[in-house]
Length: 607
Image (cartoon, rainbow, N blue to C red; front, top):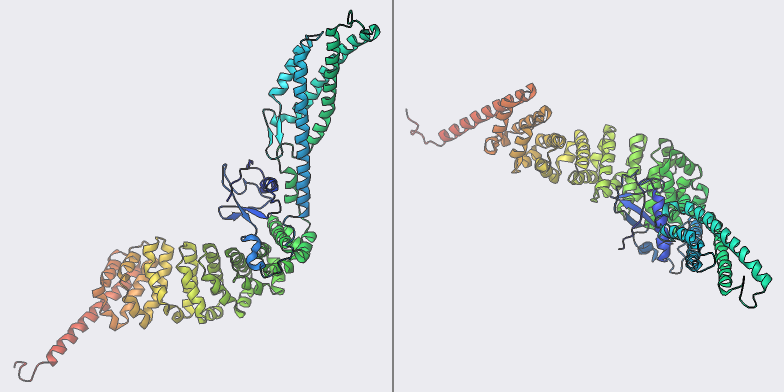
């Protein structure tokens, strides 16, 4: 693992950061590497800013390769070893990256040449103090000092550094003006000294042709040439600065990462490209679909729905992930869902529920949730095929995000109508899956799955009360969470166990039953107290079990409800339960007395 430091503003797009990473990867010879950014489990899209994702300063963002395994070779090994994987980055981005690198390289060379001329200017300034017009060294010294102090430095990987890094354009303009201003005096000095030397001929180095004057003429001529050359260099530098990425790398590439994609071209690559090109096309379609509803319609209008369905079933896991993500984005619009169902898309999504990565399963489940929550007709299509078995299979995995979505799907199905609930109840594998979901450590998943189980129990109590593992979990819920919504759902489902003779026997055999019911009874929720009173009444309806209530301490719960509940129904149920207990106790005593009398021998009973 490597750590890269990138300087970005909160208002910068994710594409800018990716563009900067492309430059770093180019330096490492890995510019063809496909990657995405992820922060706290969420993948970041190019068109959004860091501020949109609420990413703070000094945050650590993970760079995740598009292929989780190296080019998905787990699957690709089955292919021909000589097969070309294709290009990892789109042609536009590669061209933009190469153009940007050329411009930056040229800028680096131009600024290096400018600094070389500045050093020559400094050298000429020092030498000018020993010339005929020595005072010219003073203004040149001031200019050189200023330009050295604020001289910007540029490197292709690091960008501009220095005091004038934010004002390098203005620096160059001032530099050019001062350079011309210093060039003029040198040209004047040269014009004043050179003609007399030419007239005299400089045969004896006397008069106007002394060694000092000759030295001055040579220095002013060289000095003027240096200033002239660097003045000619300035326009090229300023022209280079006109490129948008004048402050930092990535601006040019960013345009191609966030620009509106050519959908037709991307779909062509998705249909006919090689592995990497298809993977990149699936990623671009997912990002494109997430930007706006208009983009979704553009993809569907160009036949992208069928293309994405095919990509989602390919052998490359990364391509499957991005294609399923794109499908989930498209299916957020109800008007697109009908077309997807017509091409057999539900079967595709059900097949993806058996995917090898959690993300594939999650995206497929999310897409199915959009379908069942927006249109009731799609619910029957899922049930008529093997959709229930596929959902149950995906539910046995322990990914919380996926489990939450699957629990929502089961609840949508169970809340449709009685016929659909009967079908669900007849499939034990579905009930087992719901039991597994309600045991996961996520309150929302537990609530959704328990609600689905309650609806199934309404239609077929037997399918629920036969789940022994469920009963133990229901009794343990008060110890696991303080959420009264879960307590209420747990109590409602427990009531079905209490109303079933065999399940009731198993219910009272659990050691923590009394503690659980007492905690429920002490709740401030009248509905939960009513459920507890009904559970106790259901247990009392079974005469064989009712005699064990005092030994279990359940009679104390009945008296607590009678004395502390403000709800009339709870009070009446508790009063009925106490009357039944009194009757059962009297019958037990009478039965015991009759049993003793029957054992006495004749003549031993008294008069």
